[in-house]
Image (cartoon, rainbow, N blue to C red; front, side, top):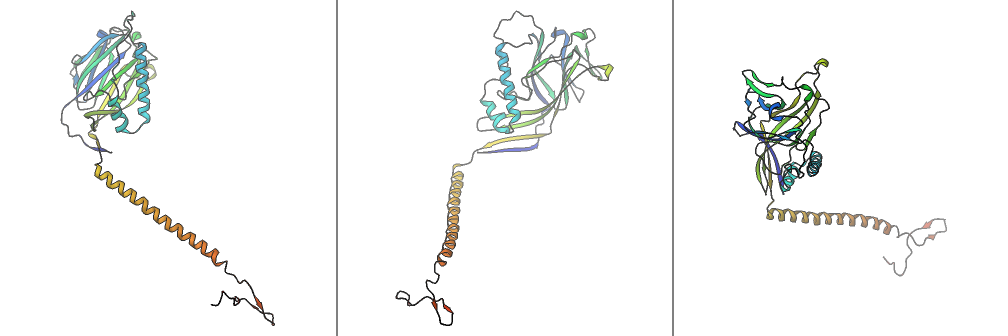
Length: 322
């Protein structure tokens, strides 16, 4: 089995890219106090009412949902250790079950204390900023603004959990880097930033073919304190940038005849190497054996002469006539 990982320019000229999101934040009155929108480098604002839904929710997970989150976090930790792209992220993921957050199994009487934002957006294929902050967004000629003046700053709490975030076509089974991420705000005026680099990826295996968009994430968080020089706006900011390159992952099987030819070559090489080693070993053994054998033919008797000399020649025996 061969797998190829190629890289080239992105030939897709579509101007839109889908973005799917499902997250929950710890904010009250989410319908009136929370705004989520996208502003890209082209100064184009994507209205949040087109594809995003705001729902009051309970931030704490039920026991079944906590088990789902722990399982997802364990998978994420294994994926970060494994560098085999085609085997782990894609092939194994397609075999897995649905990665969606299961519904609550308990009928909790606890009032909603958070805001769940889920849905999809179509954004331009340029760098942009998807952010969730206090106040509804209002567009104006120089960008947009959020009506946060009527919201008490002490009630800010941007603790959040990202159940799912993906770009492009929604493919069941793929686990994205931010799925299962949970952040707890230690201060009411805190900023969470996610810097995302999106790479279009074409996947072709013997089981499935799909156009996906894998991405890498760099996280950063800090407390907004204007008196200490830490300026900014509290909220959740996801700054994404799309790569101009495309990665193609292709899986191909080796033909049987080619496998058989290679197998014969390997077997023949083994026999040839074995014969060479046998010949070399035999040669070495013969050299050593012959040396010891020659050492055995020493004079068995010596004939002394009258003048004191010794004749070291072999005596003429009955069996030694030559």
